Amino acid sequence: MKYEGDIQYSYQIKQSTFCKYVLIAPNKAVELNFPQMLELRRKINGLTTYNALSEILNSHNFVLLFVADRQHLIYLDIPQLLKLKEEIASFFQDFNTVSA
Amino acid sequence: MNTIVRKQMAIHPEVMDLLNNQIEMEMTASASYLAMASWCDQRELLNSKAFFYKQAEEEREHAMKIFTFINDNGGAAISPDVKNVNNDFESLRAIYEMGLEQEISVTKSIFKIFKAARKEDDFITEVFLQWFITEQSEEEDTFRSIIDIFDLMEGMPLKMVDERLPKA
Image (cartoon, rainbow over all chains, first blue to last red; front, side, top):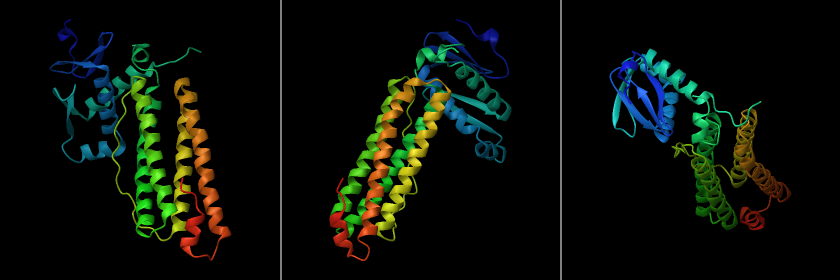
């Protein structure tokens, strides 16, 4: 499957197969399995708390993050970080055990 | 994206985050009881030391129950970072009072997760937490009963009070 055509400035998440997802970064597409997605969610949630964002703003203004079991390193500035948080939140948002 | 996540995990992601916080809380409680056990052990308070060693093990078991529950349901359990454990206590009674306060905090936290699970229709977690609610009620009762003994035996030598306390 090719993702090059979809590459944009912001990070995006797409489903590839039942248990494979793709994190589309500005310069590459990173395949993730579900545990790796959960780990990415945890890291991004940790980096987007008020204190963590203040710390990033007061230091280098960007973060480097290992993803996919430390196989890939991604660069995120603050807007990208916040956009990726939203992207992950929307990915996990539709979880419903029962319909109303 | 609808239902993609549901096919991978049976518990709600935000409830999972709260459960991970709970693991940290239970492990912190376990470390705290271990510190209390050590204080009692050093002072030859045999029943109290046995009680707190047992409590430390029990809290760890609670954490492990939640840990395996998260992973069994497709989530990601996080091994917690336990820091700043207090090892300095003023008296045996103060230790038991601190233990009761700790249990009340744990109960409140369980209620918070229970409410969140109910709000998100996460019935699997809700049913799982019912055991913890009963357990917390028993734990609080144990500590209250012990503090009652301190009141009833006020003025008696510490060793004598300790001999009247339960080991588990």
